[in-house]
Image (cartoon, rainbow, N blue to C red; front, side, top):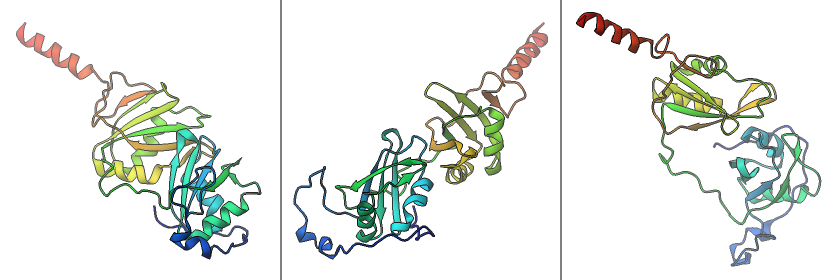
Length: 240
């Protein structure tokens, strides 16, 4: 994630942290409950639907943010500032309420000095994306997903399932379209203030669709299974 510059939020009081920038003054073993100041801040108590954009909007006034890692299932995040002053300013100011995504969050220094970035090429791309719809106040259908995704390329198949909340898999006809859709749609709201999209690469490269309805659709054939039946009937006629 690229760096984020200071926004137009209200000014915060800066703290002199020159002493903390000397490595020899740091403890050899960190106390996780009272860690030494770090460029990385640990954020807790976040809403289930939190996105990187929410964190940036709430915290960019403390300093330039260089990287964010959202731990959605734990409702936590790690926020790395470009210099330690931003992190110290945030933690000091957090004695006052700070809201992220309309919910008060809690802040402390992380025991890590840097957030570990994924190695180049570590994330395996795919032409199928897995969408998790957070805070789904309104219905999500194949028509909705197709409208959202077809902007980025040809969509072959869509399957919606509701085993763990509301999720959808969307199969593009090529990897490039899926990569562009993932970059553009991650953290976006389908409807204002709800149905936030978390986007990941799925494992399968092709989806199986047996019926065209509101929860599954094969856009490469008018009716899944019909072509197979027609071919079978044609074969019977030829042998009859």
